[in-house]
Amino acid sequence: MNGFQRTVKYVAMALGLCLALSIILAIAGGVSALFGVVGWWQEGEMGTVNFSQEYAGVLNIDIDNDMGALTIRQGDVFRVEAYDARNSFTCRQQGDTLKIESGGGWNPFRWGAGGTQIVVTLPQGYEAQRVEIENGAGRVEIKGLKAGLLAIENGAGAFYGQDMSAQRTNIDAGVGEVSIQQAEFHDLDLETGVGATTITGSVTGRSRVECGVGETTLNISGNVADYSITADMGIGAISLNGQKISGSAGTPGAPNALHVSGGIGAVNINIQ
Image 1: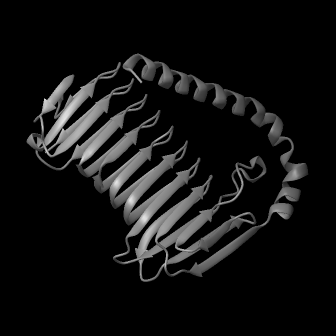
Image 2: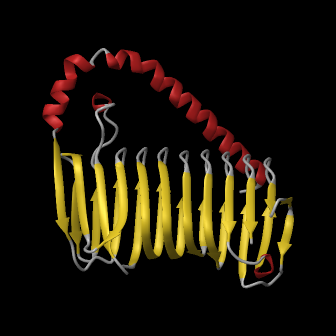
Image 3: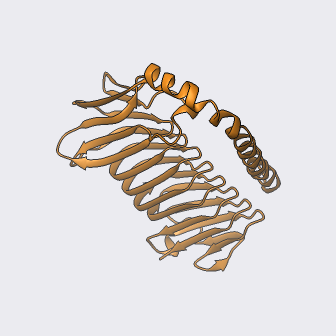
Protein backbone atom coordinates (compact mmCIF):
# COMPACT_ATOMS: atom_id res chain seq x y z
CA MET A 1 0.00 0.00 0.00
CA ASN A 2 1.60 3.30 -1.10
CA GLY A 3 1.38 6.64 0.67
CA PHE A 4 -1.55 7.90 -1.40
CA GLN A 5 -3.55 4.71 -0.85
CA ARG A 6 -2.94 4.88 2.89
CA THR A 7 -4.06 8.50 2.94
CA VAL A 8 -7.30 7.63 1.11
CA LYS A 9 -7.85 4.71 3.48
CA TYR A 10 -7.59 6.78 6.64
CA VAL A 11 -9.54 9.72 5.30
CA ALA A 12 -12.31 7.23 4.52
CA MET A 13 -12.03 5.84 8.06
CA ALA A 14 -12.39 9.30 9.56
CA LEU A 15 -15.37 10.18 7.36
CA GLY A 16 -16.96 6.82 8.11
CA LEU A 17 -16.56 7.41 11.84
CA CYS A 18 -18.18 10.85 11.60
CA LEU A 19 -21.06 9.40 9.59
CA ALA A 20 -21.55 6.56 12.07
CA LEU A 21 -21.60 8.97 15.01
CA SER A 22 -24.12 11.18 13.22
CA ILE A 23 -26.43 8.23 12.63
CA ILE A 24 -26.13 7.08 16.25
CA LEU A 25 -26.95 10.55 17.56
CA ALA A 26 -29.88 10.85 15.16
CA ILE A 27 -31.54 7.66 16.37
CA ALA A 28 -30.65 8.13 20.04
CA GLY A 29 -33.67 10.34 20.64
CA GLY A 30 -36.06 7.76 19.23
CA VAL A 31 -34.45 4.90 21.12
CA SER A 32 -34.51 6.78 24.42
CA ALA A 33 -38.32 6.97 24.20
CA LEU A 34 -38.42 3.18 24.43
CA PHE A 35 -36.30 2.94 27.58
CA GLY A 36 -39.18 3.20 30.01
CA VAL A 37 -41.28 0.59 28.17
CA VAL A 38 -38.66 -1.98 27.27
CA GLY A 39 -35.75 -1.28 29.61
CA TRP A 40 -37.14 -3.31 32.50
CA TRP A 41 -37.76 -6.28 30.20
CA GLN A 42 -34.24 -6.22 28.84
CA GLU A 43 -32.74 -6.24 32.32
CA GLY A 44 -34.98 -9.11 33.35
CA GLU A 45 -34.31 -11.15 30.22
CA MET A 46 -30.57 -10.55 30.04
CA GLY A 47 -29.72 -10.35 33.72
CA THR A 48 -26.24 -10.05 35.15
CA VAL A 49 -23.94 -12.45 36.95
CA ASN A 50 -20.77 -12.34 39.02
CA PHE A 51 -17.99 -14.83 38.37
CA SER A 52 -14.76 -15.92 40.07
CA GLN A 53 -12.57 -18.92 39.30
CA GLU A 54 -8.93 -19.94 39.54
CA TYR A 55 -7.08 -21.71 36.72
CA ALA A 56 -3.91 -23.76 36.23
CA GLY A 57 -1.95 -24.90 33.20
CA VAL A 58 -2.89 -21.91 31.05
CA LEU A 59 -0.37 -21.11 28.32
CA ASN A 60 -2.55 -19.13 25.89
CA ILE A 61 -5.10 -16.41 26.62
CA ASP A 62 -7.82 -15.18 24.24
CA ILE A 63 -9.99 -12.27 25.38
CA ASP A 64 -12.89 -10.64 23.54
CA ASN A 65 -14.03 -7.50 25.36
CA ASP A 66 -16.99 -5.68 23.80
CA MET A 67 -17.82 -2.61 25.88
CA GLY A 68 -16.92 -3.29 29.49
CA ALA A 69 -13.78 -2.72 31.51
CA LEU A 70 -10.95 -5.26 31.30
CA THR A 71 -8.11 -5.25 33.82
CA ILE A 72 -5.07 -7.52 33.70
CA ARG A 73 -2.81 -7.37 36.74
CA GLN A 74 -0.31 -9.42 38.72
CA GLY A 75 -1.10 -11.30 41.91
CA ASP A 76 -0.59 -14.60 43.70
CA VAL A 77 -2.72 -16.97 41.61
CA PHE A 78 -4.23 -17.21 38.14
CA ARG A 79 -7.77 -15.99 38.63
CA VAL A 80 -10.56 -14.55 36.47
CA GLU A 81 -13.29 -12.43 38.01
CA ALA A 82 -16.26 -10.74 36.39
CA TYR A 83 -18.74 -8.31 37.89
CA ASP A 84 -22.09 -7.20 36.48
CA ALA A 85 -21.46 -9.55 33.57
CA ARG A 86 -24.15 -10.44 31.09
CA ASN A 87 -25.57 -13.95 31.12
CA SER A 88 -23.78 -14.49 27.82
CA PHE A 89 -20.39 -13.96 29.51
CA THR A 90 -18.16 -17.01 29.15
CA CYS A 91 -14.79 -18.03 30.56
CA ARG A 92 -13.62 -21.53 29.74
CA GLN A 93 -10.35 -23.42 29.55
CA GLN A 94 -9.78 -25.67 26.57
CA GLY A 95 -6.55 -27.57 27.08
CA ASP A 96 -3.88 -24.95 27.72
CA THR A 97 -5.96 -22.09 26.25
CA LEU A 98 -8.22 -19.83 28.30
CA LYS A 99 -10.97 -18.07 26.36
CA ILE A 100 -12.85 -15.12 27.85
CA GLU A 101 -15.79 -13.41 26.13
CA SER A 102 -17.62 -10.50 27.73
CA GLY A 103 -20.72 -11.63 25.82
CA GLY A 104 -22.99 -9.96 23.28
CA GLY A 105 -22.67 -6.62 21.59
CA TRP A 106 -23.74 -3.09 22.44
CA ASN A 107 -27.16 -2.95 24.09
CA PRO A 108 -28.82 0.51 24.05
CA PHE A 109 -31.19 -0.49 26.86
CA ARG A 110 -28.27 -0.80 29.28
CA TRP A 111 -26.66 2.48 28.23
CA GLY A 112 -25.55 4.37 31.32
CA ALA A 113 -26.22 1.38 33.58
CA GLY A 114 -22.57 0.40 33.80
CA GLY A 115 -20.95 -2.54 32.08
CA THR A 116 -19.14 -5.78 32.66
CA GLN A 117 -15.93 -5.56 34.67
CA ILE A 118 -13.47 -8.36 33.97
CA VAL A 119 -10.36 -8.76 36.13
CA VAL A 120 -7.64 -11.23 35.13
CA THR A 121 -4.99 -11.82 37.79
CA LEU A 122 -1.73 -13.44 36.69
CA PRO A 123 0.74 -14.99 39.15
CA GLN A 124 4.11 -13.30 39.58
CA GLY A 125 6.59 -14.47 36.94
CA TYR A 126 3.90 -15.83 34.62
CA GLU A 127 4.72 -15.79 30.90
CA ALA A 128 2.16 -16.83 28.32
CA GLN A 129 3.01 -18.40 25.00
CA ARG A 130 0.31 -16.35 23.28
CA VAL A 131 -2.06 -13.57 24.35
CA GLU A 132 -4.73 -12.18 22.03
CA ILE A 133 -6.95 -9.29 23.13
CA GLU A 134 -9.78 -7.88 21.07
CA ASN A 135 -11.28 -4.70 22.49
CA GLY A 136 -14.41 -3.20 20.94
CA ALA A 137 -15.55 -0.02 22.65
CA GLY A 138 -14.39 -0.97 26.13
CA ARG A 139 -11.56 0.16 28.37
CA VAL A 140 -8.51 -2.04 28.86
CA GLU A 141 -5.89 -1.54 31.57
CA ILE A 142 -2.91 -3.89 31.80
CA LYS A 143 -0.08 -3.84 34.32
CA GLY A 144 2.45 -6.63 34.10
CA LEU A 145 2.05 -8.94 31.09
CA LYS A 146 4.67 -11.10 29.40
CA ALA A 147 4.10 -13.26 26.32
CA GLY A 148 5.86 -14.91 23.43
CA LEU A 149 3.24 -13.55 21.03
CA LEU A 150 1.07 -10.57 21.90
CA ALA A 151 -1.76 -9.58 19.55
CA ILE A 152 -3.95 -6.56 20.32
CA GLU A 153 -6.88 -5.38 18.23
CA ASN A 154 -8.41 -2.18 19.55
CA GLY A 155 -11.62 -0.78 18.08
CA ALA A 156 -13.15 2.42 19.41
CA GLY A 157 -12.14 1.76 23.02
CA ALA A 158 -9.22 2.91 25.16
CA PHE A 159 -6.17 0.74 25.79
CA TYR A 160 -3.65 1.51 28.53
CA GLY A 161 -0.70 -0.75 29.29
CA GLN A 162 2.28 -0.73 31.61
CA ASP A 163 5.16 -3.19 32.01
CA MET A 164 4.33 -5.30 28.96
CA SER A 165 6.79 -7.46 27.02
CA ALA A 166 6.63 -9.84 24.06
CA GLN A 167 8.96 -11.51 21.59
CA ARG A 168 6.53 -10.76 18.78
CA THR A 169 3.92 -8.01 19.00
CA ASN A 170 1.04 -7.15 16.68
CA ILE A 171 -1.05 -4.08 17.50
CA ASP A 172 -3.99 -2.70 15.53
CA ALA A 173 -4.79 0.56 17.31
CA GLY A 174 -8.11 1.29 15.57
CA VAL A 175 -10.10 4.41 16.37
CA GLY A 176 -9.48 4.58 20.12
CA GLU A 177 -6.50 5.74 22.15
CA VAL A 178 -3.60 3.37 22.80
CA SER A 179 -0.92 4.17 25.37
CA ILE A 180 1.69 1.64 26.55
CA GLN A 181 4.44 2.52 29.02
CA GLN A 182 7.47 0.43 30.07
CA ALA A 183 7.15 -1.73 26.98
CA GLU A 184 9.66 -4.37 25.90
CA PHE A 185 8.57 -5.26 22.39
CA HIS A 186 10.59 -7.32 19.92
CA ASP A 187 9.52 -7.48 16.27
CA LEU A 188 6.72 -4.95 16.66
CA ASP A 189 4.06 -4.71 13.95
CA LEU A 190 1.99 -1.61 14.68
CA GLU A 191 -0.90 -0.24 12.65
CA THR A 192 -2.42 2.96 13.98
CA GLY A 193 -5.81 4.40 13.07
CA VAL A 194 -7.70 7.53 14.06
CA GLY A 195 -6.82 7.73 17.75
CA ALA A 196 -3.50 8.76 19.30
CA THR A 197 -0.97 5.98 19.86
CA THR A 198 1.99 6.20 22.24
CA ILE A 199 4.50 3.45 23.00
CA THR A 200 7.32 4.07 25.45
CA GLY A 201 10.09 1.60 26.22
CA SER A 202 12.23 -0.88 24.30
CA VAL A 203 11.48 -1.73 20.66
CA THR A 204 14.00 -4.13 19.13
CA GLY A 205 14.33 -6.53 16.22
CA ARG A 206 12.62 -5.89 12.90
CA SER A 207 9.65 -3.60 13.45
CA ARG A 208 7.06 -2.05 11.16
CA VAL A 209 4.80 0.92 11.85
CA GLU A 210 1.96 1.90 9.52
CA CYS A 211 0.38 5.16 10.60
CA GLY A 212 -3.14 6.49 10.07
CA VAL A 213 -4.96 9.69 10.94
CA GLY A 214 -4.02 9.99 14.60
CA GLU A 215 -0.68 11.07 16.03
CA THR A 216 1.84 8.28 16.65
CA THR A 217 4.64 8.61 19.19
CA LEU A 218 7.41 6.08 19.81
CA ASN A 219 9.67 6.85 22.77
CA ILE A 220 12.36 4.20 22.39
CA SER A 221 15.12 3.66 24.92
CA GLY A 222 18.39 3.09 23.09
CA ASN A 223 20.83 4.64 20.64
CA VAL A 224 19.98 5.84 17.14
CA ALA A 225 23.16 4.16 15.87
CA ASP A 226 21.66 0.77 16.78
CA TYR A 227 18.73 1.28 14.39
CA SER A 228 18.31 1.20 10.64
CA ILE A 229 15.30 3.42 9.95
CA THR A 230 13.36 3.82 6.72
CA ALA A 231 10.60 6.41 6.51
CA ASP A 232 7.92 6.53 3.83
CA MET A 233 6.24 9.87 4.50
CA GLY A 234 2.52 10.49 3.95
CA ILE A 235 0.74 13.80 4.57
CA GLY A 236 1.89 13.99 8.18
CA ALA A 237 5.52 14.63 9.03
CA ILE A 238 7.83 11.94 10.40
CA SER A 239 10.42 13.15 12.88
CA LEU A 240 13.37 11.49 14.60
CA ASN A 241 14.46 13.17 17.81
CA GLY A 242 12.71 16.35 16.72
CA GLN A 243 14.14 16.44 13.18
CA LYS A 244 11.99 15.68 10.13
CA ILE A 245 13.16 12.66 8.17
CA SER A 246 12.27 11.01 4.87
CA GLY A 247 14.04 8.06 3.37
CA SER A 248 16.74 6.51 5.53
CA ALA A 249 18.18 7.35 8.93
CA GLY A 250 20.24 5.67 11.59
CA THR A 251 22.84 3.06 10.63
CA PRO A 252 22.46 0.73 7.62
CA GLY A 253 22.78 -2.90 8.71
CA ALA A 254 22.19 -2.07 12.38
CA PRO A 255 20.90 -4.88 14.64
CA ASN A 256 17.46 -3.26 14.84
CA ALA A 257 15.34 -2.23 11.84
CA LEU A 258 12.37 0.13 11.93
CA HIS A 259 10.22 0.82 8.87
CA VAL A 260 7.68 3.64 9.20
CA SER A 261 4.90 4.34 6.70
CA GLY A 262 3.37 7.72 7.40
CA GLY A 263 -0.30 8.63 7.09
CA ILE A 264 -2.16 11.84 7.87
CA GLY A 265 -1.14 12.22 11.50
CA ALA A 266 2.31 13.22 12.72
CA VAL A 267 4.81 10.50 13.63
CA ASN A 268 7.25 11.27 16.43
CA ILE A 269 10.15 8.88 16.98
CA ASN A 270 12.40 9.57 19.93
CA ILE A 271 15.39 7.26 20.47
CA GLN A 272 17.59 8.14 23.41
